[in-house]
Image 1 (spheres, rainbow, N blue to C red):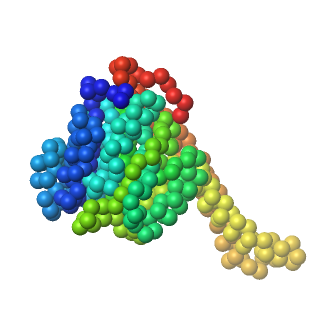
Image 2 (cartoon, rainbow, N blue to C red):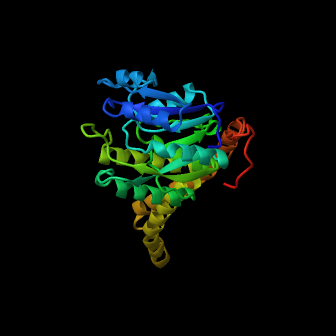
Image 3 (tube, rainbow, N blue to C red):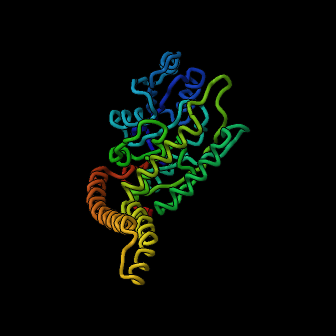
Length: 322
């Protein structure tokens, strides 16, 4: 491994009612990276998650507001480290792959290493989840112009400068989408690493709700497009409105050319109104595009305040093309 014990590595493990799995997660993380600090963030658990995690040797902290996004927001603000590991507490991800992910981060150097799930046991993916994930991957890759293979993975490794420049606005399971889009928008150097993925331990229940969480993720993606691609969002909206306005206006213009009269006055007013709204939409897109540029420059400057990930010799690694 290219890292040394002097390098501060912190694992953040969000948990809600994971007493059946959390002990093994903590034990396996300790075996994979012995000097790593393991923070189990209890998220309003009603079972013995806290007691089991404490007995396993984890540093247990609490976030009472339910939602994985709230946990990540709190942990990224409170935990101080050079390398951050984010992994679910349900024992579905292969912790044996963690050293390889950390190696990849430091050797790049990269700021974001995404663990791309490779199913190692039958039933790891719930019905519809894999298809939905592929659909979201395709959609986000096309919109943001950067390829991603598993945007909903909960297994990631980050540099300090990624974590401290990440706003973490999401509240629940949409946090993975926000992490992915933040990396794309800021254009940080990142890489994907295949990781093992298996079913939850017998007796434990998934917190995911397929359709509910799917709609929340889709809503977040649309919101992120509006914020991160305003010219695209408002340009398409304006274009659709313009098409409707033209279709409504053509018969009115034809009648006026033929008769010199405007017999469909309400339709004419509606067509003009829609065209005005279309132009306003384009203007809003232009204005927000300028605001976006200023916001990205500020985010980039904040990102550059922190050093690149450190290699084994204690120096920043050589730059790597993102």
